[in-house]
Amino acid sequence: MGSSLSDLVRNALIGGMLVGFVASYFGVFVVQRRMAFLGSGLAHAAFGGIALALFANIEPIYVAIPFTVVFAIAIVWIRENSVLAEDTAIGVAVAVAMALGIVFLQFKDNFADAQAYLFGSILFISGPELGMAAAMACVTLATFPLWSSWAYATFDRSLAQTDRLKVRTHDYTLAVALAVAIVVSIKLAGILLISTFLVLPAATARLLSRSFLQMTVVSVLIGTLTPAAGFYLSLIPDWPPSATIIFLQSALFVVALGVRRVAQ
Amino acid sequence: MTSHAIEAERVSVRFGDHDALRGVSFAAPEGAFVALIGPNGAGKTTLLNVILGLQSVSNGSVKLYGNLPQQLPAQSLGYIPQVKTLDRSFPGRAIELVVTGIRRSWPWRISSSERDAALKAMERTGASRVADRPIAKLSGGELQRVYLARALVRKPKLLVLDEPGAGMDAAGEADMYHILEHYRRDHGATILMITHDWEGARTHASHVLLMDRGLAAFGAPAEVAREDRLLQVFGYAGHKAASHGGAQHG
Image 1: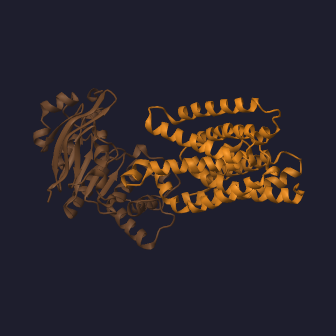
Image 2 (image 1 turned 180 degrees about the horizontal axis):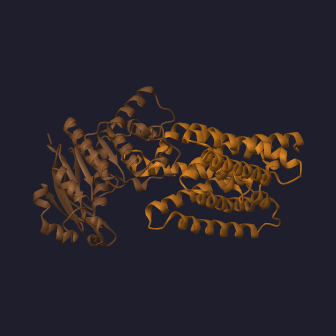
């Protein structure tokens, strides 16, 4: 049974706002902890999982989530248990995941499905992907009580550790949440743009905020509203929605930079 | 009943093939003011991390008031890190940082009782006028006073400071010693402080823990701070030894 245009638009708007909310919430921790490269690395890692699913004819998100979560845990483990820096661990993990993805895709006849994940295809968010985005939004809401602890460890890790916060557990929790958030957001923004989608709302919010709570709220507002606004804007010049959303978020970032300069 | 606040017994920490600490033993009585001094690479920060429960030992043990460091309730420990490690890009105000001393988490809002307690502690350390200032706009000295207020607001029985004089002028440093001594006297607290200020240690500390390449000498300042020993460890025996170029050891 095919979907009507109104169903596709409705899914795109709801899906866009849900993943925008999730990505922009975790984005504040990504920006303040300087984890943007981890976001980019996990998006590329997800590519391996998606390619494996396409090769096996399984709904991609069901494979990509566990695949990316394993990579997220591995990256945090390597960072905490070896002399390697995080960016080195990410570089290694990305290379392995991408190589796997390339191998799996070699056995596919056409690359159209893979392109949707590489560049984003908000109009073709599937039912399971919408359900997963809704579930992830609920999980994100459920992590709100951890906001104070995560914020504290973000501000000063050693201070939080001396206060007996389980910082390592939080690191793993955050990395896993980030991995899932990235996978559910990939259909919206695409692997190539998703890290920007994580970073831009939070970076804009940082420029406009005096407190971490304010930064979180502003980031979530930008992240949740810009996918819908960007989707409608993309219809005017008939541009790809994911790129238009990024342009819109980038424009807000530039405005915030100007506001900050004037305010100082 | 223990009468020691900090008890270290043959503590060794090894990183690969490097011994950061080699069988360090000392016992600081409750209410002591211990100045932890030594050149760069002497093992001061490693020992501090062991005491804070952030670093596990390869051998030996450390006890705080008879407990393993991880078992000491967080409310009993006040820690002041080096200001240079602070992430100044974090969007927060000075008073929020002080309230973390009460909550042990970053506040999303501050209740009136928390604000009163935080302001009282900030008044005590001379930081109340910067209470609502963004952390990014605090000077090094102001930040030290804010961190001190954060540590004192929970009324800890053990106060651990990592180079609190860094970023402070002479008057600020004198003021800090005054605040610490009053707090120690009023609350019977124990203080452990990493410092490069030899004169301050001699004048204000009840004990000196002198570290040199993983080994330690512990005792009253007059015993430990002998000129021949300072010359041996620092290559210099005067004021603020470690701040002089010739005093640096590997």
